[in-house]
Length: 125
Image (tube, rainbow, N blue to C red; front, side):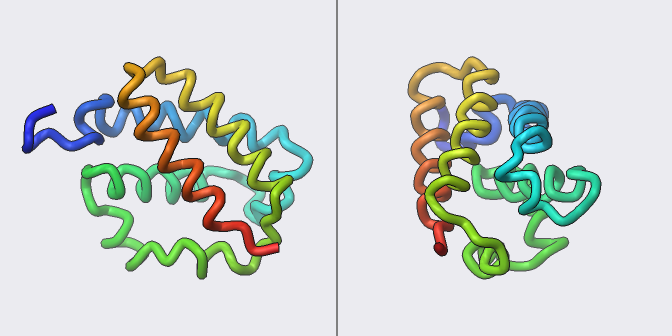
């Protein structure tokens, strides 16, 4: 990775994040614990928001902030009860999605470590 190459670029840019988040939401759509946490009938909006957030976080375009402002993750998730069972279900589906990218070990670990941290930080119940 060069000093100018972001993690976003290193793992495949927008296409990698599209695959990651689409795979994740395929799991969420069928999950009896998580699906009720998404009020929209169609998960497309949630999929778009998470994809844009992660793209921005990892060094890609700043579309998320341009469209939605500061991420404020804890505030945005406050209306939803998120306990350990919800966290664990989220991590299961995200883990499956990360595995599906077949990233080199170093990149896999970096991405996974952040996702685990984020999931733990959003517990509010």
